Image (cartoon, rainbow, N blue to C red):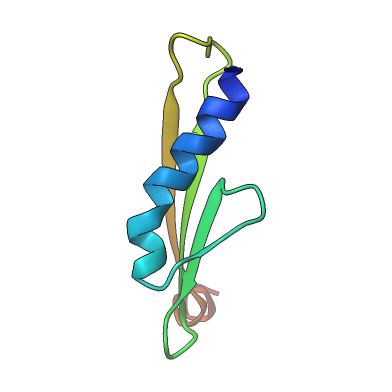
Length: 76
């Protein structure tokens, strides 16, 4: 199996519990996104792969961002 296929399959398996919590997956499964009920907070989880992945070893780096519209206005 190619490293890219292993990476996408792993991303999809990691995403399952998040999908049950209201997150939505992107087309390729590398990004999970959820917007709060009041539309102020946005939660994103990105999965990045290593350039050194091989068919024997695949590394996934999770990146988590939380953004707030009201905080952005307050800072400005």
